[in-house]
Image (tube, rainbow, N blue to C red; front, side):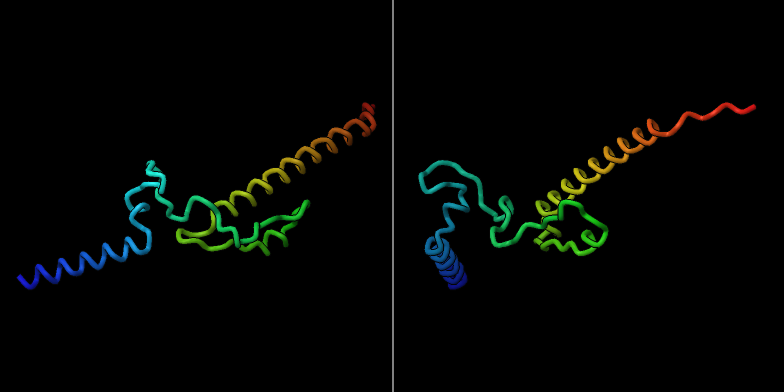
Length: 117
């Protein structure tokens, strides 16, 4: 009987702590308005105190070497890595287009080959 009372006391203390901390609505997935909501585990939104990881307009290899991402619970912050990869993709596409345009201009300016004797 005393083991049951100890268990009951621990359960009551746990419920009191949850009520005091205001965690019951979050555990039961309820908003304060009474409607159903999602559990806020802190992984949905990026932490506002972290600065964004940005590349310069024309990134060089040294810029990529200096990149540092914040470490989250499950590894690097996905939002930071995704942003840098998007920037790199756009810069590579722009460079490829410029290389292609310069190659076409070079072919246009190159004199025609003279036929041999």
